[in-house]
Image (cartoon, rainbow, N blue to C red; front, side, top):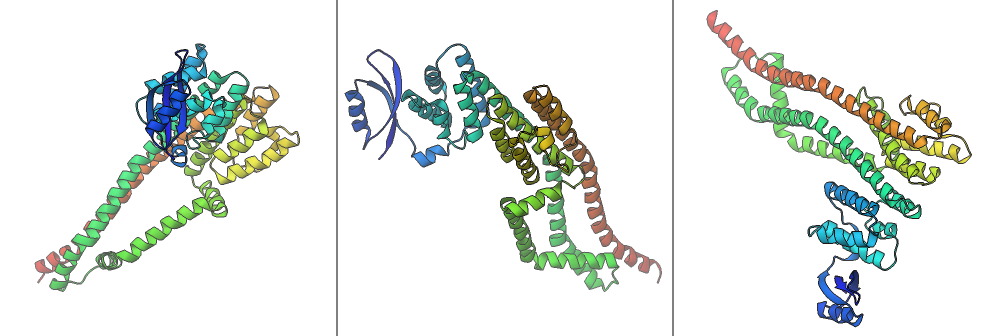
Length: 400
């Protein structure tokens, strides 16, 4: 049966939002009027499963969090604030989401429970922070922390993408140029050399053989690339293979340190967010380990969590040969011994994020000349293999 979102006015003139299931719109209007409500707007909403997967672009979501925080700080109730934000939002995912959440709240459901319905937009750790803010009457502070956490994570992600953009473009152009020359240019020169019956140097012969492999064996090459991509995809989803992959990447120069810092910053950010919201440390560690998104570091955090459950401090609970940056233990020790664990995690987040950005800049600075040198060597080698037989032919013509 279709579901409808209704905006109506009650007998006191107060605007209300509710949801009803009915056969059609006239049946909904009849039911609403039977409740002594005057309907202003009625629209069909998406089915439950499809609606639960709804997501909002990050800039819109951040703006919503900031606006809701400001209204709550000004003394506006959550019910009224959500109605106003839903009315001001343009038609789309955000308005649909806000109308649904407000409809649930109007029926007495807590905000964090209403938010959990949109599992993609409000994953468990975000819903837990909102729940902690509701129970402690510090919801504005929780929303501000959520917005700061999302902004920080998005900034780190943008930095990584910007760093990989230029090398990706150069690498794609290099591969395209090499394939074009091997598939289109080299065969024409090979036919010319064959018609002249020239003795070919080893470099030219190797290039012609490579061209033949590319032209006649491209299905096998494409199949191999697809198999490698599928293998990497499976490695990311199989726990054992993912652990081996993440462990191997930590040993790669520069890249390993960058990955280590990014995962550390991600763990510290989420653990701090949950800790400052009043979530118990054991639960914060479990969620932080999951959201670190690194199999090796996540396993070590879970091992530390078991020790913390017995009463040991976090800095002493990490394995002796842990894979985190070496400075994380002194920072945690200083925070725990002074009762400022949240500040220590914030410092770790900022410092690890800064180190990750520095490493990405260093990797990019080294990668750019390396890619250019590789491109020059490939193009120069192909050109040299063309010119060597020509030089040989010209030399023979000058010495009869």
